[in-house]
Length: 56
Image (cartoon, rainbow, N blue to C red):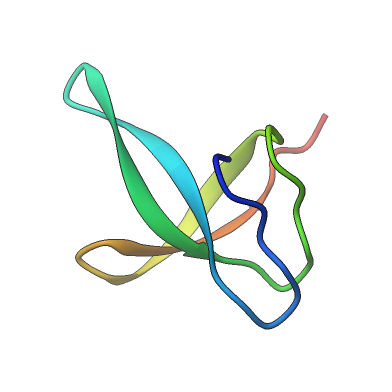
């Protein structure tokens, strides 16, 4: 997570893609702080994803 996700708003995550990483706009049902590991659960556009906190 590079930019925190606030309630009701987008943040930004880095996603591992083809041996590198790319930034995607991300939304979540809960707020998520910066530097928290997440898992992508859905894609809403070419550069937008829905994420959840990675279970510990």
